[in-house]
Image 1: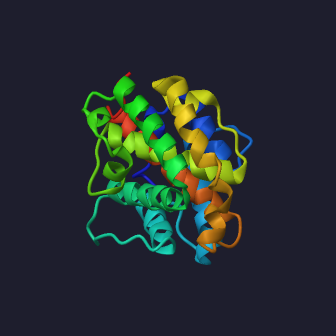
Image 2 (image 1 turned 30 degrees about the vertical axis):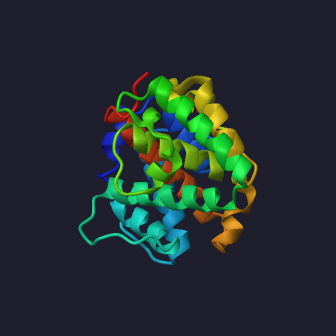
Image 3 (image 1 turned 90 degrees about the vertical axis):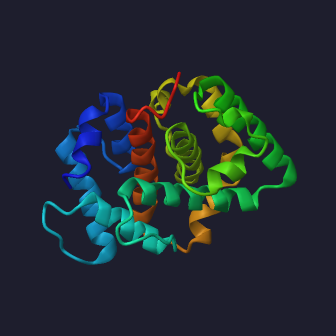
Length: 219
């Protein structure tokens, strides 16, 4: 799990607490305890016993396989994380009414115009842009945090507001429309047991942290 350590090392105490909540932990939220929890959730899902240093990438790939997300053998872990986020967001988007899609577009553009230094706010079809092709920086951050809102809404998990760092109240509003239909996501994918319901939001959360640490958020 050494491939996850740098992200957790850079994360604040509150950010680690947010990940711990998604994994069903009550604390403490030390790096090694978060990694152990993530590994134990994946072991009980896949019915295999792994060594203590199982790679985080392996967990991401297993979840991608479960969601029927295609990826290359040598594809970077962060790219697979992004594809998982796109799968979640696409599922939500396809279930929205035209009115909900219009509201979602407006809120995504508001967030992009306020915080993005890459010009995404100029797009008139930002949702489509987030779903198409490769993303980086703020695009990954916005995509992952929005997808995270969908699955945490389905789980009924209330994360600390500071989890979304400096995106301010705008990102909270962006997540609102997703919550209208979020409860049906896991049923659509026919996921059994509680573990996938822990691992999917955890991966989305880690993708959001990674993008933020790499300078994906401009506030």
